[in-house]
Image (cartoon, rainbow, N blue to C red):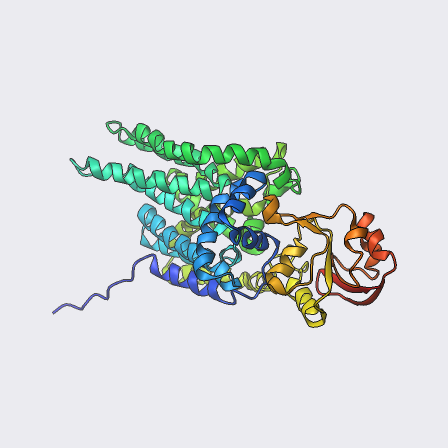
Length: 482
């Protein structure tokens, strides 16, 4: 009687479990940062207010906000609840990376690619953030996998099966565009796959099916792209034009670690060299989006490394090919080495999501200071109110309805359909009845009153003095009284 063969687990299971474990580890370690506060603000608005927001400034992220609104209604808005969708999305991305790699290049390549993806610092960084990048990463791999399945030969007489395959690809592609417009730069790589399949199977209507799959994308994403283009200048006014030096630092930017990014690029280059033309799909899925976003970023503000996180799994596929060329244990050792090299970045990103990591903004600390010392008649003033730090959202998240009265507020962000509130045009009149004011400022200031510009600063300094000053990281909190 022969020896029994031990069944192997599905190729997607080890990467998925490892990713789930890594991303859940200390998932609440870093407090919500500015972008996540924007997500929370949008996701907790009534549907009509959310619609106005997308029409004013954030159309590109509108579908994600709607998804998070549904999620928050059931799961709540704790830090863990807000980040859990990203955890699940990155777990799915790891599983799909393994499946895609196994289908194209064999089980070993897929497994190693998925495991490598799991230990990258970027997987934890964006798997622990209430933003759409993890979901876009999963959908990018899913759409690519479904395209590979769609162009594969189908048994004779299975035309219905072919249509279902292309319908699945079309749905995944539309979802990708709705989640992250920049991720549609994958389309040129997909077009190359379609053309290569047409050349291989000239008797099949592959090009026509591929073009038909673009119809839902055009109908659903086209209007969104049009509105988002009109908001581009305001939404990305903080982004500098792309420079050639940015390409050299991209690997470290998208992986959140320069040394890990360098290792990934080296392994991916070895994998591409080993495969030659067979590496066309993952190679183009990395290169074309990067080059397209860079080309646009030279002319208009768009070059933001995190917008390209969705290409990382394809880099891992190329690396998995290189690792599959050596015995499994040494290959696994290289994966473990990548994980070890990324440990400093893993620890840092669990302290803060800000960049650089030393630029922590302690919203929770500021809120605790106010909560410990406030009285029922106290007021609160923020400076600057229109900045990207979202000082008012930070206190609103941590204090809720228990924060001091916002005496300068004339229209909330939700009412304005914006991310920022409108303030009183005559601060002196609006502050007239406030005996004690909590002043919350961005940055560290020894003289808080002098740091407030314009009419607001004049009104605060008129007949008032600073009673006490605190300096939570990245902020200044001052108690000002008559």
